[in-house]
Length: 309
Image (tube, rainbow, N blue to C red):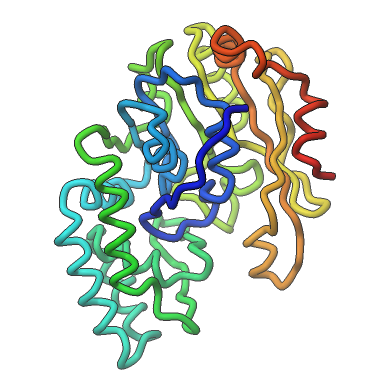
């Protein structure tokens, strides 16, 4: 694995499931010649931001089916001044009654889908844990113990992200298969789709679900095109396994990451550690082997190095 410098990487907003905490491990499996990094389930774009901060890609393609989220990304990249000014105004206005103010903005957002309202909501909800109703309405409550990220800190993060990604990032709100249609062999695709067991449930943790079979079929097509990709997919929280492994016929290299304490378990009052799976496509593995043979090691050796149970 390549060695990465310890640098301060900005983040645009709290978002449950963000790979910010393990981004460096993911980046260590990037080839050195990535033209465009595609993130078709971008969320908070943690991997793309980290890749940009480390200079690991020239261009970026961020996609998410959540249209208001992509609109927020558009404001971050093209209008950071205006976005931060609106956030600061809301942050100050809330203090007479934070709980009532949150519900007011939430009701307005569910009608208008304004991206600056979404930023405020994301800053206030518990652990960045986004929830949608079966009708597609944002229905998570606020963490009323906190006011959300302070305006000066938010401004620093938003401007930092904008500086890294503005003018070299394409934004789309498409099905992930459409979002990566133009990907070439010189590109890299990082995918962090909804965990199995968190889609098509009453929980509605994600804006849209994704079936296992549809995802596997899409990966097969990507293999036929010799595309390089990395997937964060299933995992283990405590003794709970999130879904079945991706099938052997895809010929993926399966690694594990010790991701620390589960934020969802913490919300429920439990102390559980999460181990996440990382899959590398065979095209990527070959690309890395051609670039630097010493990076090709056995899964057993990698597990010993990571030293997790």
